[in-house]
Image (cartoon, rainbow, N blue to C red; front, side, top):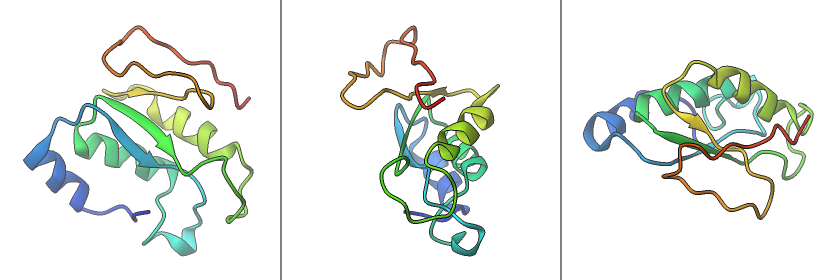
Length: 110
């Protein structure tokens, strides 16, 4: 869990680029912005980290927030368009080959 802030850019500046960023994406609410990022903030944090690939976590697991279970996937997929990083959205148990830039994933949550 993390709210969005300048720490992502500081990490990216010092340690980037990051091959794989496993990023929070889900169970968010504007009232919790200091501890849970909104999907657009997750996308920006991935940019700040200079991520090459992003694997969303914390979504579709349990109900804490008022959004639907699939909203985090929908919003992050939309926010990822045109970004320098690949969005990795495997179904549970599907292998991910981070170095394989041709591997693609279906929008299984739709």
